[in-house]
Length: 148
Ligand SMILES: CC(C)(COP(=O)(O)OP(=O)(O)OC[C@H]1O[C@@H](n2cnc3c(N)ncnc32)[C@H](O)[C@@H]1OP(=O)(O)O)[C@@H](O)C(=O)NCCC(=O)NCCS
Image (cartoon, rainbow, N blue to C red; front, side):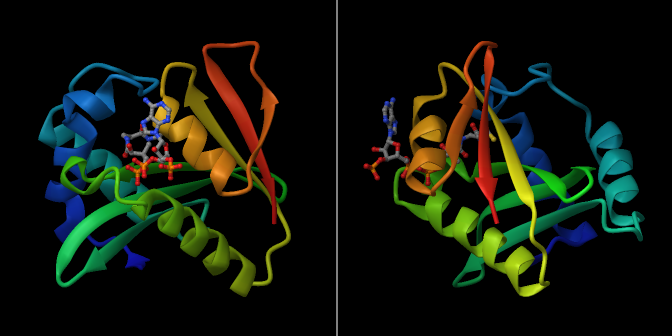
């Protein structure tokens, strides 16, 4: 697991625009590579570490990513994408666990939030299996919480 670099921009773009990923995204529309590149450069230029993207690789293959956005005092929002070719193999839980470990090793004691589309059953199950608690199911995107 490592911080993403600009060399990951293409892979992240491919994941983000995959129909199975877009289906449950907050912004379901396709995005252009130019827009994506501007977005990712903006994330990377964030010296205050309010947003970080981690990429997980195995045998030189990119398996997936997590993104952590600081959304409040000691509060982060996490999102996750596993490359469609590697879904269904349990990598999701490993990536969530590794991301939590990174934050824990930084000495952070924080709340991690995740917002998951009601119909995204694999993601709902993944967060529950990873120790997240369903905190609000009244909206289309259910809110999950994890106390680190
Ligand atoms: C959601 C996602 C991260 C899950 O990662 P993954 O490694 O593929 O997770 P898995 O496929 O191993 O699924 C996790 C669990 O959900 C279960 N599951 C899968 N599809 C399911 C369904 N339709 N209904 C109920 N459970 C389901 C799996 O069986 C597994 O449980 P198990 O370990 O008891 O067998 C991955 O599918 C993904 O990247 N999706 C697109 C992006 C996304 O939706 N991200 C989440 C929004 S933050």
